[in-house]
Length: 267
Ligand code: MN
Image (cartoon, rainbow, N blue to C red; front, side, top):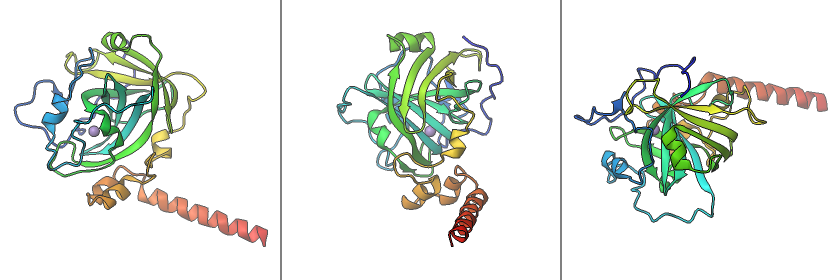
């Protein structure tokens, strides 16, 4: 157990789109939360929340694919009602999942709140696209980072149960040593499973704002608005999760003027 320190509270305005009536138990701001204990090999909750005749998300019925010995790690940047980053680690044939409202930080002094959510099927690791409006998590999903993870503990299940999982990430954006720490200091109830995602000090630690600096998909290199456009989603809503349009325009102008200066120098 560690102190919450300067961690920001879960923002009031952060909620998933679809909250079924009569499901208030174990919910915090519309997210169904998991207790911090063992990993149940069950996609029941995942399936219950989704209507697969409407959403393009995977049904989760596929046989466990051969993973070639490595464990899948990924982050999906998800512009639902509010932007968050879904952090997922393959374990026991499913993707253990945490919703990180502010996204990961490479700065070891920054603790990012990570709310445990329902396990997702492994096939979810390939999903980038649009969840229709009105469905659970309705909005645009980007595969923001993808790679493999390696536990730094000998027994992952015990580590999860004890509430402290150390691991190494081999992603395209996130690398090096990290920890997820369960904290009962937040929310007070064990069903409200708040964890903290923290970077360990190593060569990959940095004060770079990775979420701002690397806003594009790790697989398609698209921005959220481009993913929404391609899949017939709500482009304006998706754009809220992308870097400011003004900033992008500034960058284009800046690089165009650099090119002009460079060509003048050459001539
Ligand atoms: Mn999500």
